[in-house]
Length: 111
Length: 114
Image (cartoon, rainbow over all chains, first blue to last red; front, side, top):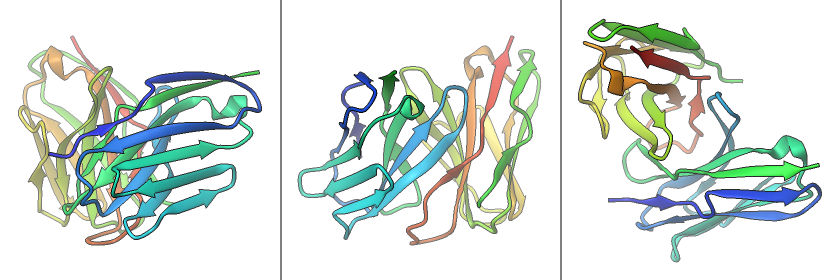
């Protein structure tokens, strides 16, 4: 059974810092991996999707990498801003339509 | 942009009531999902549907049922609401089978059962 872990559960950084969020999964037979952002009391917003054949995806200040063999993905946020404060979740999709989610990393960027 | 709309942001219901949570997507997506999200437990899949009138149980289907009579609408039904069903409910949709399109979520319905 696929399990997805995100460490740390919470992270607090000063504005302007570059940071990395981690996601690990137990079964490397994945179809894709997605990173989401969730603001308090809201739904999830898709940030990046990495297909199993890809190594990374970039969108603006965000860069996500995927290493299937080691069961790891990272989300790199450059030049963090207070508006980046949110909970970030990763999710992996195996052979079915279902995604398995991690519990998220709550990021606080302090002005 | 894909829009997934959940009919209510907040609901308060009494124990034993039958509760309907509605979700509509506007992008002709094949797949639709219902999750619940609880502190410390993360997102858990209740039911999903990959076509009209088709449904599959997720990880925690007990106490819930679903209906998908039209492609754009996926309803979650709590047959007899209980206090342990107090939670944030999230609906999501995605394009279709074997695609690599992302999952799109609604804004959630926070349900309180008293």
